[in-house]
Image: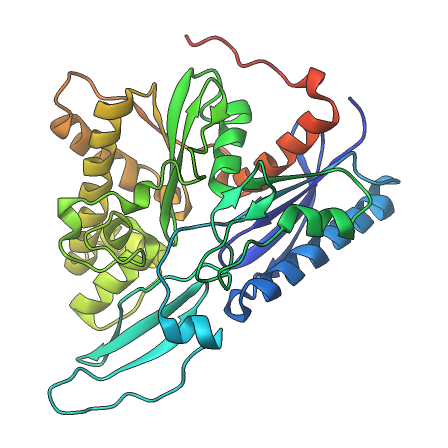
Amino acid sequence: MTGHLAAVDVGGTSVKAGLLTPDGDVLYERRWPTRAAGGPDAVVAVVLDAARDIVAAGRARLGGDPLALGVAALGRVAKVPSFARRAGRAASGACSRRAGRKPSYWTYSGFRPVRRECVHGVARQAELSQHALGPVDEERGVARRSAAAGRRDVPLLDLVRDAVPVPVALGQDLRAGALAEARLGAGCGLPGFVFVALGTGVGGAVVLDGVPLPGSAGRAAEIGHLRVRAAGDARCGCGSHGCLETAASATALTRGYAELTGRRLPAAEIAGAVRQGDSAAIRVWHRAVDAPAEALTDCAVLLDPAAFVLGGGLSLAGDLLLDPLRAALARGFPLGDPPPVRAAALGDRAALIGAGLPARDRTAPTVTPALAPAP
């Protein structure tokens, strides 16, 4: 197969677009802010601009239109405060110090309208998540209706098809990342594995025979909403309490460290502080290990995967995360040796590469490489 592919990955903070070889090598890449605070219409506008731009880049750089364009869209389940649904923007208001009430205000952070409570000078997020696009239905080509999307389906596939003169395929970001790892990365050759992304939030995908399973409503493997003891009673964006995402995400690390020290650090700096022996960083890091170990134990008992493939920004901490996670999983697994935990191989390009693979399949399905047999 000759020619090139185009791909767009719609993430929580940025939209990535790239030109790929049919084998998944990235030839060229650009990024734009997602503009999620503007709601679904603003996000769709960025996606359409990115699609047009990357197709034009293919003409300019590689001498022709791509064979196809793949789009991987972020879609999550979340409850949204009524004010956010009505306004579609940050509610204004300074901290008020009324008697008997914690001062608070509302603001936007990426895809999230969050309530921040001022506690000893620290802004603590109550994390009422909003995602500008709802769960992705690959078959229908839509981001399904959600409170964040104004209670309507977003016909993303048709909109992109109208914007570019090439075949288009639509997928969900985590399943796209899992597909790329299955074909080209850490899951290659495995009969089945669970992909877990620990990043700003927590999500996952279950892969069987090289195919990520969407579930009956496109919500399969929302592992971030498994309840774990290590999370305590922390409020989650889904409206529940004690979800994995409230303990094992980059957001949770930053919040937990701020509650202990009064300082807000990004997760990467907290990892560095752990290596330097910072007691507060070690405390929140231990929780960020214990929580996914508990969730992975449940997944292993239920699914018996050949491996767990760990991606997302926190996985870049390497052995600082993987070694204690493997040890905790071994301690908690009741049925002998647990499935191995592997680091994802494709980094933050996995969803971009995975978006391009279904586009290639639909253009020339006969050239899709077969997975190697499990060792």
